[in-house]
Length: 280
Image 1 (tube, rainbow, N blue to C red):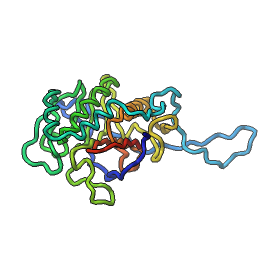
Image 2: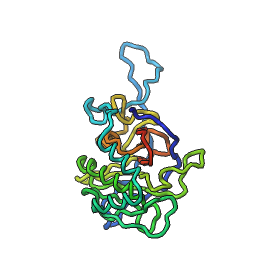
Image 3: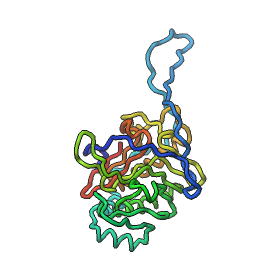
Image 4: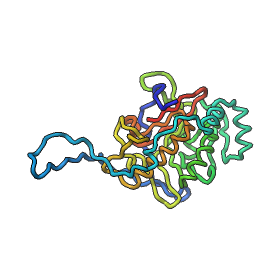
């Protein structure tokens, strides 16, 4: 199975979230830099007449063996199988699994439209903090099933040196697919929008500032490139994104290379009955 687009996805921009954090939240990513990657020009050889041929966009020199440039494996992974089972679990089964795992969550009382079993994260998952909107915000709620998938993902993030994930939102009750009345996975609390990461050494990776991938370009694999304005943080972010993609734990993983609406965040979601695994 290869990564391919199997259904339309929500493209509406998400609300802008300030990247500064209170002392209780820890370090947040730095504000995104403004501007766009520039284009370079090729100097003509001394003995030749100037040429008007457009050399195309300049890209950052990246080692050929950079992890993000390794081809994505199309084989089904154990995390993929597990994620599919979790996404298809019943509310009762999900609650039992939460209890078995002893995950740090609080249950949200009352009826939350669209979310089968609404919860909030209240602590670290395998040493990784998910810094999300607070308890007074609906955007910080998520379905029990997504919480369990994030627990599995956190083992991978911890191995990659991630200390914190900066979340713009999980739940958006009125979110729908573009040009359609069909609700997006955000409306079910089964999606996460990530705008940055903090590594264990204090390094911050901000999606809008550091991704540097042209719309329509490959995010991972041998054909993937990083714009000339990128740097070591861009490589680190891309390696991390592609490691998440390799797990195939999400049905959809959308990056700034997908479209302009995703310029400042990564969108990831799961779905009951979902079998496609899309990276864009």
